[in-house]
Image (tube, rainbow, N blue to C red):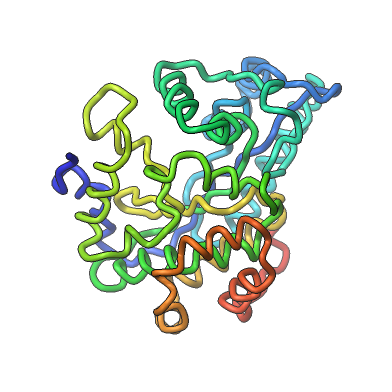
Length: 319
């Protein structure tokens, strides 16, 4: 049982209608022979860089850049391209190559777990009880996660709903891996009780729906319900004052501005958000089916995604 009062801070939302955008960009890292490289090497070479405060790592050694909020998508794209360019140059000096790809092609057995804190060891043990997808997700996948300001009032509720409903269509539109072994297909198999690739978060009060979602997921970490909430991975995650869009494959850094602009338009443009909600109003019960179709590369699902963002103004020179 997870009380709604524990979940409520995740749904606090901002007090104003800010329109910032931020990104968490994941990159696969390998040495010149194609083998894994130590994250300690990358930490050391980046220690005195301008991007060092924003550098992190995922369990399989994937590199992550979590940049500060930018005022718009164009600035975000420029900042990201500059940071990735500097990071690549530093990594080149130690023979490490970085790839903005959603999947490491190596067998998961060849990709060691590099983050071995109690949290990640417990996560791996739990996922192993379900199947092999958990290890693949932790060690071999990469994504581009876009963070958007979450507004107060009715508009904020619409933001939450529109990103959930549009998720599978946008994931398909921007997919860079499809089929049974794709990044999204892997996520669908990891642990359905804690990923919510369906409409369970769209029923009734969002806080209570999320509390019910949390209660249905196995607890595998110590620290109580607040820590348990950090082990939930829905395609759109509530983060208090902002929403974290998690469903995208890793995008090339030069394309992130365009993707972020499309998501920002859905979240921040009142008229577009209303049109999109009307367009997708009846799709909730079919979300699970749409997510499966997106993972398999269904062209009709991708076509809807392209339709939703078709007339978002183009961004010139973001890189």
